[in-house]
Length: 174
Ligand SMILES: Cc1cc2nc3c(=O)[nH]c(=O)nc-3n(C[C@H](O)[C@H](O)[C@H](O)COP(=O)(O)O)c2cc1C
Image (cartoon, rainbow, N blue to C red; front, side, top):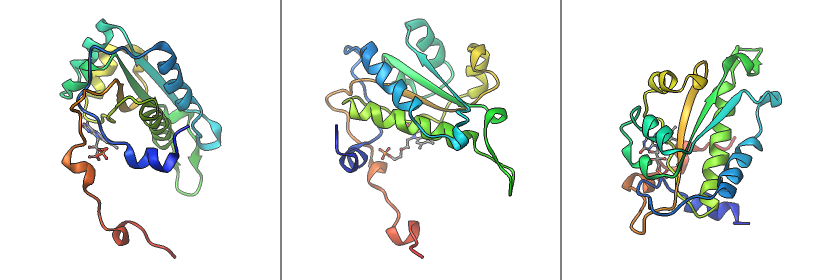
């Protein structure tokens, strides 16, 4: 098992994949399992995971995003949340559906990296179009597309990867 601190430090958004290398069913199962192991508020599990595996499904999905590089990934996951199934905090009526689904997606993203593959959390896509193309996703708030693929040899972190606001701006110890 990879050291978690190292994994968190090493991870970066990979945007150049090697389309010639397949991702195995076993790897896909591990990625999904990591998502299913995620905690959710009151264990309500108000999320769904879809795996776009076939060429036809991935090509159709690609029409809903400008992030064309994900087309080189042999599998693309979509993660959605359902507000009606989620815990609502009684004090302020905050619905935790997207929080829960984001933890699921984060587990999956880190598992992808732990497997030696690359991914980028994609938020820039036309969710309404995805729901039109894939009716099984209708009724869910689609929070992420996550490609999983072997990285191309010259895949490097973007300049943004290094940008970090000062510790003192982000963290306050009380
Ligand atoms: C919620 C969310 C949405 C994102 N959407 C996109 C996206 O649509 N396209 C993209 O190329 N990167 C996207 N990213 C990746 C971020 O740009 C990236 O994580 C950030 O610049 C830091 O770089 P790093 O992941 O390499 O550390 C997204 C990340 C998050 C967390």
